[in-house]
Image (tube, rainbow, N blue to C red; front, side, top):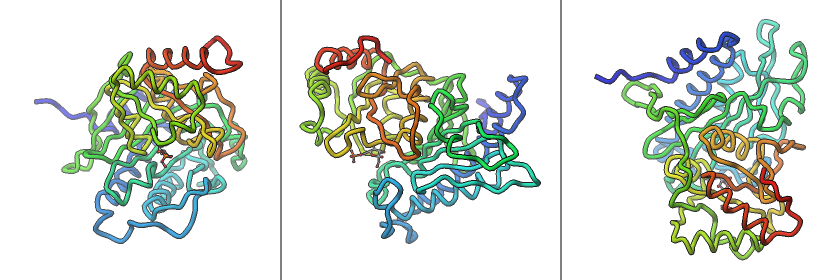
Length: 338
Ligand code: P6P
């Protein structure tokens, strides 16, 4: 009889293997798991209660916000605010970061960046959506409120990152820098249970994931690489939820691309709470994550909360091939790859 291992058990067991671990990060990860269960419950019944449809408001990135976005944002904040380990959060849904008040004179040691419900455009048509999170150790003095600097840290400084995909099943995938593990929610017991141990991305795979509708708006080197993928008879899979497209590539191999376009000259996806956490996961699983200038996503120095970036991430062999196209067709690209 296979004994299930819950997320809580796994996190605590991992903490014991780190003598320096003090438990705060463990508590924070468990709080995120709990928040994910609440969000999952609402995502699963969204069609039954009136939280579908759009709010008449826009988020910090100027995109119209679906009600479930706000609901997920508020639940995650509620849990993180009371966790005691989190000093504040930056969210796709909020213009500025949120400072959590001290509890018993103590401020949390960590800050969290979140995309509460990635793939909003898919909510109303019952296509997978996700939550993305990244956790940093704060850099400001712990006896003071957090500052913007606590959030503008390169992805390399993440102490943990992960995502939840609300799909045919709800899976939480995370890493604390020592590999990637996946946990599937068992609704019968309300627990995330270890289902994918030590995930490793295939060296290459059968998929490329890009919004083909923007093909003519990409730079030459990206179009040439996309032509190459098509000539190889790779299969195009793109559903407009980054978490779901990356999840497929993590397990089956492939490459995800969102290059810059005329509409988004720096790329559309947000560096802090989309690119960095997912690049962290992909790299921890053995993959690579670069921008169109072949800079390593995790080494980029963020300058503002909602900064955008181009991103190409996935199987290492395919990223290296993409880099060859950039070096061949793009002007002034350095020879070394990020
Ligand atoms: P487009 C969702 O809004 C998102 O931020 C990502 O999850 C997704 O990959 C991308 O935008 C989809 O953007 O322009 O292809 O609709």
